[in-house]
Image (cartoon, rainbow, N blue to C red):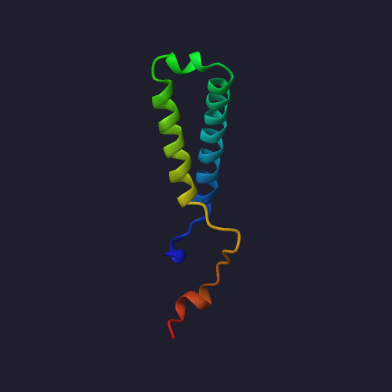
Length: 77
């Protein structure tokens, strides 16, 4: 599956993951600071959805040790 890594998709996934994680961090810090934030309508739903977006976004980001070598990918022996 490493053949199908797209640099454009990786950049887009990093952006979406960063934005979702930053909003998630704000909600988590606010809920740690004052637990009454959790009583606001749909806050737990927003935290859950943002956590899912962060988890799904990390799937599309290749690891640091990934090097695209098309010669190696084309040889199967």
